[in-house]
Image 1 (spheres, rainbow, N blue to C red):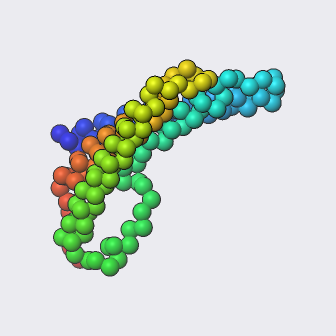
Image 2: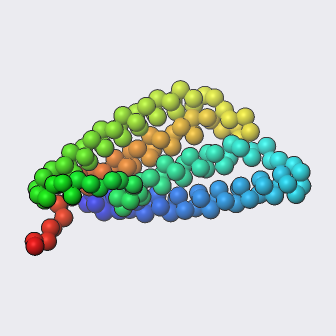
Image 3: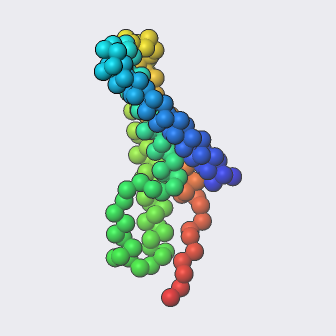
Length: 159
C-alpha cells in the first residue's frame, strides 16, 4: 500500500516537473524574444520563471528519491560485504533522511508562513507560494522514504 502510494506520488511529481520544465522553457524563450526582438521586457520576466523553477526543482526531487537516482558515492559495498550490515545501514540512512526532511520541511513551513502576507510585486501573489514548495516537497518525499524504509530488503545473489 505504502509502496503503491509512493509510486503514484513519484509519477505525479515526475509529470508535474516535466510540465513545469516545458513551461519554463517557453517562458524563458518568450522573455528572450521579447527582450531582444521587440525591445520590451514583460513585467513578470524574473518572478514567474523563478517561481516555476523552484517548484519544478523541489517536486522533481520526489521522483529522484523514489528512483534512488540522487548522486551518491556508493563506496560502502566495497568495504562491507555483509548484506545484513548493508541493509541495516540502509535503514539507518532512510531514518536519518526522514528526520532531515522533517526538519527542513518545518523550517520551510515557517518561512512560508512568515512571508505569506508579502506579495511578489510583478505577479501580485504571495511570496510564501515560492517558499511553500519546500515543505510540500519534503512532505511528499517523506512518504517516499518511509515506503523505502519499510520495504523488504532486496534479495542478494549468493556466489
